Image 1 (tube, rainbow, N blue to C red):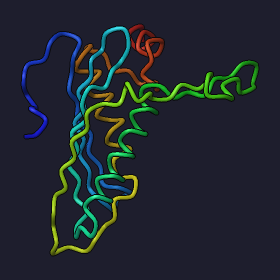
Image 2 (image 1 turned 120 degrees about the vertical axis):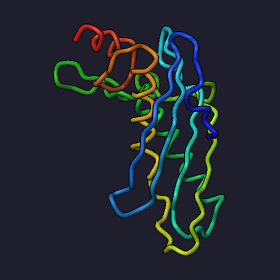
Image 3 (image 1 turned 90 degrees about the vertical axis):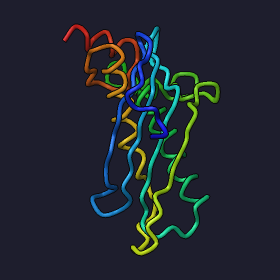
Image 4 (image 1 turned 135 degrees about the vertical axis):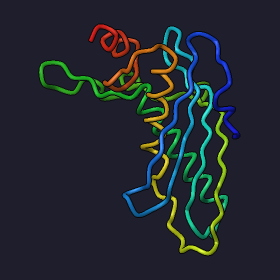
Length: 162
């Protein structure tokens, strides 16, 4: 496959997969993520396969799916509202971390064309599978299943202690 699934990776690197059908009636989407887990989780690559039935606008499908995957990557690895004494303290962009352009993984998307079926729409089909693929890749890389997001160093250490 396009992701090289099954190839040997260096220590601290892992691949994971996530798969879902959007809202149980929309597009089908599978994501393979490759991460490097050293001082933090770095998502190096995302490979995505999406089935939206009849494809009307292939560029639009790819843009929607890849945009959702990058948003999910940011949520999964960085974004977190912080609180102190019951109040939100991450109320500006300096205090609320998001994925930087320099952290954007390489993304390759393949559309599974099924013109005999009705169009399903792309929607946000890649968001759930991307987060799952990243978390599964991290578990493969470090041998620990981290259950609290975002997958920051603090949450990873807490997961190791659990």
